[in-house]
Image (cartoon, rainbow, N blue to C red; front, side):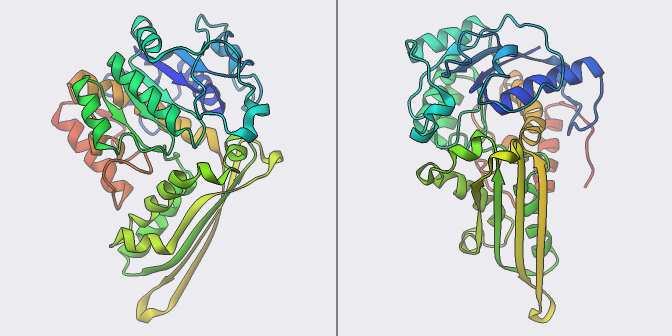
Length: 366
């Protein structure tokens, strides 16, 4: 069993928890990237601990809390009451000023790092997943420190550079835990589609002249990102993820823009992305691509989460600590090392795991 803790009981947490129940009860493998990683299937994942700061969620059982406002993911499965009660966390910079009314922070006492580390140990948490709002710089580092203190592996799903920070990698090595991140890359989300198209142009001898990716949505993630001061790392993470497919990523970065661009309430958890690429092909003749992508944003993230929490557990069992770049590269926008191709990243993951005798099912061929 893989015992998971969650920081931030928002829409992704709701989709993730419901998806665990769905795959356990149906036995289906449809929609999964990998049905097994080592000896673990999705049915081996259990959420045993949760932290939030909202008065609507703290003190409630997790299966009730995931449907509290401002969450918008509907009830997709029938969940039984859980014995996991959402614990009060630290607010820090996790709530932007314009989001106070939405998140409604509780006035309960905030725990210390030492208290939370003991909590993680007492609950036997294997992997702590960071699902805080974008821009939660201090809060993310606080929980990364807490997880390391407890010897718990950490999955950083937001664009704060933790796994890609050598200091944190060394910290997790010293505490014998794994670190994966940063900024989760959706299953078929805007960034991975944008990357695939940009890489295709480069691979076929073309040159990207300019490109943008515009994203709008209607949940609290997009409302939170209306505050531009919280977006520097997000825009860098997304733009560099696309630019890294090109021969000179940092030169290409000047030609690429990718980031959240608008909050449209009626879209809910639907994200609409517009991807534009202007390229030069044979004899310098122009090629233009315009793509519209419509996805359920939270399903895209949860499809990756069910892989990475299993991978984090496997890494620790193998004695692979810190932030091995090859473990994060297929799944995150800003891994410790930039990769030009998602196919190459996945192939290297397979090769590395194979060296340790870890089987992945299905294993895609390239």
